[in-house]
Image (cartoon, rainbow, N blue to C red; front, side, top):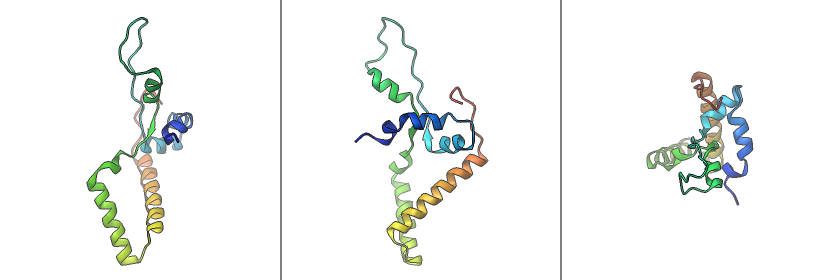
Amino acid sequence: MKPLSFQFSQEIQNLYVRDDFMGAVAYQFLSPPRPTPPQHKGLVTSPVSEAKRQSLSQPKLRLRWLASYQNLGYILAAFLCGYMWFGMGLVGFVILGILFGLLYGVMRAVVNPRPKTKYN
């Protein structure tokens, strides 16, 4: 099974370049595309394949913040507090976390304007 970033690459690209509110929210959750160097005819600039180069030039879902032990510790501490104080189970915690994450992204899209780049 392909990762979500590859499976829905065209939809993610279309959402990322929109100039409306949904594009601003998508900007908060998607990593920007990496610029690719211009290709010159007859010159080999990189051993990266054309398919890999195209995948690097598209926005992707950004979950790198989960790779930090500190953030995972915060999530575990929040789950334990919710479990001990409110009797919240794992499913309720995940749903609440998704709702708070979406609310956070919407608030950041409202407060922080999207910088003007060539992708806008």
